[in-house]
Length: 168
Image (cartoon, rainbow, N blue to C red; front, side, top):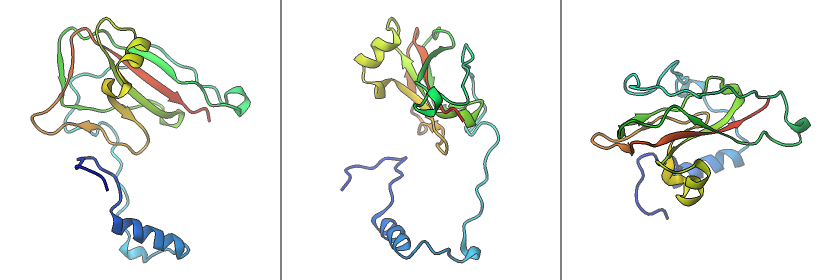
């Protein structure tokens, strides 16, 4: 059994797991359409509680081919330093990673690279999870820290985007 409680825990309860497995074992029969939940309302724009104080964009364009190595392999991750080094300490209360062309993106991870470190050094030395600021995967939500909390980006840090493109 899991220990502790996470605010963003997405695990199914034991009862929900049993319901799902029973539905699968029963042939995935469609239920009463009148009992279906309302259709999802997708937001066009920022999903943050307010407009962002700062928007940081990639410094260069990446060409995504229609296929990579004839479809035998996926396109390698691209690591792109973005923006300028932070001129002062910044406390981040919320952050959202948004791709411009969703259809060509599998995921994006935004890392904070500490001052004086090269990205490859920081990612190997500092356990990448500690450096992660936010990520994008289809269906994910922005990072919004609880009231009164925030993540520090120290002065001199830079941002690095790990881009996983999906040729299509």
